[in-house]
Image 1 (cartoon, rainbow, N blue to C red):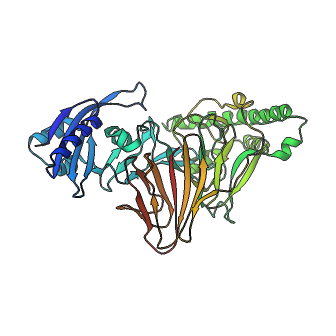
Image 2: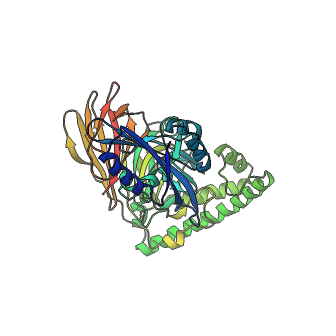
Image 3: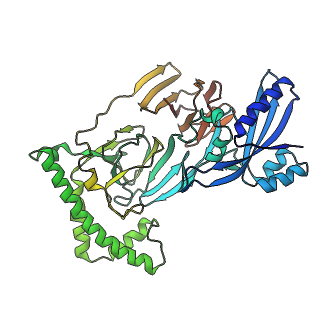
Length: 455
């Protein structure tokens, strides 16, 4: 029968049991740990009771392979254990995966609706939602999984995992354009994976990135430029609020929450119903505001490092992978739709924070290159770095064991990572306790992957 142990730290129980298992290996041993988990990402940080299940297996090479799972169905799990059920039965009936603690773990993404499209979170742990880990059949919230053995999995960084996500804007101009915003702390980098040809027929999309230096030069000094920009934004904001007030009344008539994202099709219908004079003013004021922004062209494969204090807004139809520090902070300077997450824009507060100089663009640093692969450093921030790995057809490369966790995503091509196959836009969590893990192409053609890890 599976032994159930109550302890605040399941990883400590694991360490203790590993010592006993090594002294007297029985080939296999399974135990469970009941513990309280503080949900640090929720308001007031409420606790829940979880049950971690560990299965230790002698790998025949003088070591132990550790499989683990976790469930919040503690009472039901205890009943099954009391009835003598195996860990396999627990996994099937309670629908949680048993995963190798030292192997690559497939991430199960979560889609978050946005006014401009959607974000797809691979490592998101927030009040708005959580990403998961999966064996392909069952899923477990990522925060639960990391609470089972934080040192093994994340070198005690389980509450600050870098955020990996995809930004997937609608292909419609205006309706698919993101907020023009800046960050004071959050560091982020975009890698372009797709440009919608209906939105951008020549395959060249864009991002509003900083300010137009020609417009800036038309002003006597930067103070004058900032004042002119603020005046343009406030002119548009006044029109925007007038329109949003009309749309809010339509929401109320249709019992739609005031903070619920609406489809571009619905917004277009409502916009067409506005008085023509109001439509004209919205267009004129929006163009007057947007003329201050610089548009940086983007093609598939381009990389954009977003410096703090640089206003930016990814444009419609440009799909990107984004790595960022897991800090939710931003200042919204403007948006051509209703902002659903806060009542006011932050333009005035941002005026003396925002950088006016044109952001620098540097070529990627080649870290390692052979005839079979090329490893480039995309970015190196204070807390994490990102690499791009290009593997030639039939090639393989070893992800080194660094003692830190890593995130690996396939951008193009099919690859195998350890025992895990990875299709395009699938991602893996590589645990800190891993050894070197081989990555190899599985199909004709080259493969491109992104690798992120803490510094």
